[in-house]
Image 1 (spheres, rainbow, N blue to C red):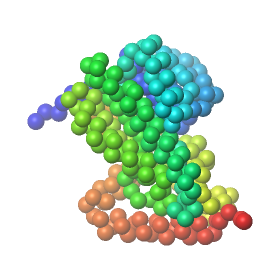
Image 2: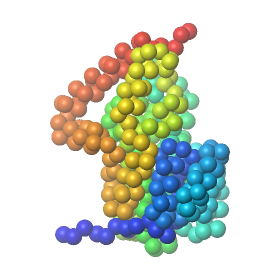
Image 3: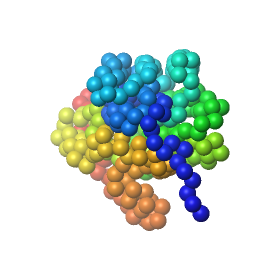
Length: 291
């Protein structure tokens, strides 16, 4: 049986909404999409960083048709954003949910505010975007594509990631449903599951109860960065996933292999998670925040 043609086989001339565009994966994806001829609509909560992305796209000869700052966790703000975009430009062709935050920590350290903010931004934010932008895509009848950036934490039971995984596993579930629901409308869905990526979030992620300046914690962060991919590498994988209509988009071989092991060799996956958990617990003991 032949594979169906990708709903968006190329980005040239396509209106692409990208969230989290002020830095990291979002900025790199905006620049890469502009390089492929996409017409960009960009948003981020960081107004200054967003303006810098717009300027970089312009310097590279790309097209930003619209940009605006918004907190995606605020439903009313997303409704207003969508009304502005649709009023000026009509329905979009591609929605890329890149924006998100991360908080790490064992459950005995996490406070309700950590859970709430992580889920509000990293799960409800994308949902707000989907509910405002996907129905107009369906009504337009042109097909399209949806990208949801999850994480390795949306696949694996990584230590200290309970709050983050609550959001990223949730986004994975939404994507799995939309993957089939939207097929009849010729709208593809990609679930992106990055491992380590060298973005500002590496340095700004709050690790509750851990002093990142202590040697054990600093060594863990350095090891993470050594194995991390660049935002530009991740952006190219995302855009290839759109143009090839690929559902699961891995950005590094270790996550692909780990996901395969999880499904085919559960004992090996469970052993790896236990050993990783023991290591994180050791780092936590040696890196506690001083009272």
